[in-house]
Image (cartoon, rainbow, N blue to C red; front, side, top):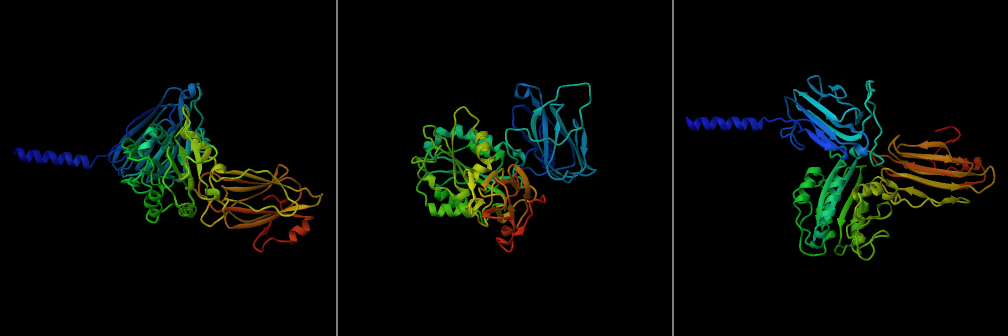
Length: 501
């Protein structure tokens, strides 16, 4: 009888464990946090666990303290992922107040600037997928008037765009030879702060983490490419072995654990790719031609974070990093170096100055005024035009051309090709400060015959899909009719700039 009772008791416990379904635990954070991510109920109440139902439960997020020593914090809430909501699967956001019985289209943002507590009530008959990012914003002062209906706000954080909706294939690398152990605390802090900003979902950011060491033994460890998130990276950093020796094998590690693995774990098409490496020591000898070919083939932007404060890489890697200096592509894929700064927010500095600054990340050159008396040198974005190389997100590149000729002369502005994210990334053509035409979309070719001076060609890109960019050629003509009859190619369409496009 005792054995039977014990057996039945064990079965009841097993059944309970197998049928567990939990909301995310209530979250309380200071208002200085960049943002937090919550999701719908899962078997363990955590990311990565299977979704579950039926369940009725609640997750409460609370921001404490004042934002920037001012007013208490409200929240900008971005619903970044959603599926399977219905009349029997609902989520009530108590403070909005609103009950969601269907999923919004795309990323849905709204403000709640009259509360510091945000209550998500789930009433589910079947499993769903739901992910929301909450970022602190200033609350409005309390009044006797009911708060206005929430509207979709502009992102008010430290970056030009909300990192929670960034789209990027991101790799973080850490040098773990014994000489780098002295830099571990600083590198761990910066990596953690970078990783916390992004949302790790298939349509947003995919993350990989790998290490470099003198034996090329670590690599990506037990995690395949594109399988990391904030939790797994934190776990890796909290259990980080360092290897004997002072020089790590970068070329072998990159080939073994990254480039050769891309066949099985491919990069996404038309998505920006960034590889950030943290080190305070140089690597082993690198075959530049092989590495350079791989970087250009896969269109990857490398960023090296120099943790050795006794060494400056402001003007480039120099002789201290003479081997790592060879890990670079060409043109828009030329690698970047960033020096760790004591007592500064290095994570935000790296993201602001490089990732969120597409002109810098894509190595856009300075833009002097170019006088055009015959033909100007062709200019392209990206700098090394190719079918497999794309421009960067967050670009604002202005090219200026001067016409020194007499009244009646024109400049033929010829776009031999333009391949842009339609209606989101654009080329703006201006004359003496007035915009006269805008180009966008894919597989285009066009030319203009424009009098006046100066003429500007401005390329602007936002976050999202990226393409092959454009090439512009500018040529001088004595008059408009001659310019128009000298069509630069059969494919190019003539655009009359006096009729606004």
